[in-house]
Amino acid sequence: MGSVLYFTMLAFFVTHELDAVKRHEWRILPITSFLPEAIGEQVFIWAHVPLFLGLFYLGALDPLSTTAKALSAFAVIHIGLHLVFRNHQKCEFNNFSSWMLIVASGLFGTAHLIVA
Image (cartoon, rainbow, N blue to C red; front, side, top):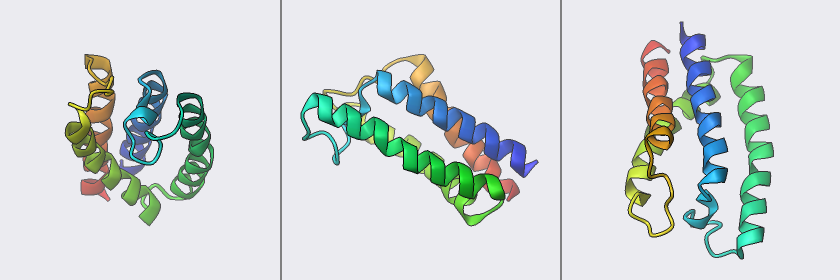
């Protein structure tokens, strides 16, 4: 059961990251918001390659691993981060679909942590 919850959380989280490109998330992240638009976009996109490689490799080896639990915990914290930045002038996560991806990721992350 823990595996299903983890992989469902991961699916929502990765899909949220696809949505984050569409919503120009680099414009509100403190580590990329100061960059010129084209550079910020590329840094944001390319930073996901090593991030996803690590998450898929380490988390997929054992969905009950520390890495998998840490990502589930981050999915919960991630909801709070989006709540903090929701009024940022450049925040574009202002629709039902975007918020469902964010919240569903956190809910499945919570369920995974409970089962794990």
